[in-house]
Length: 183
Image (cartoon, rainbow, N blue to C red; front, side, top):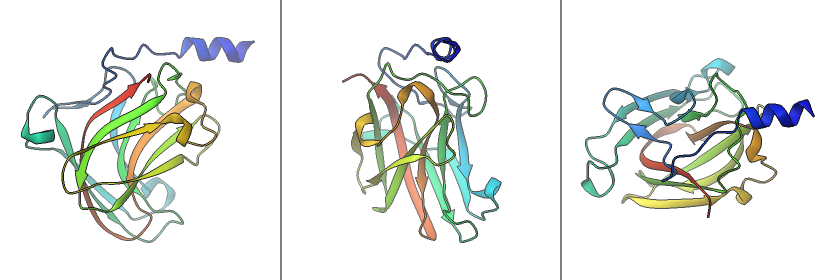
């Protein structure tokens, strides 16, 4: 019974448009949680690096929806090297948050044509459940139903990350208009 009460307490009200990326020149903001942060394998002894900056323009050259440039260098040094951009939906790092009001993750991306992953971490596991995507040269909207994240429980999400890796090398992509939706 206590478990159910804890989950109810951490349920968040999603924005009407579902947008969880509120990027500005001053902040990588979000409508709830701790927001967006650079993420890499350094805490695990890895040597990958990440640089995140606001892009000059959003999808299709507009300034209506801001985008961020993500530049990652993946280096050997950890069994599964990564670097990217992570969203922390809780009020504190790795706090389980009930995002079951949504069943789909959508975002716009463009980049170097390489493969990336969206990883969702849940309470009780340090290994994210991941789905691969390609960052094409032109802006593209990607839609991933939660059902593609095999075994993921949306009521206990601790992190959503967009990562380069594990192959060593340089990676570049832009991401914008990240949304959690009920479809």
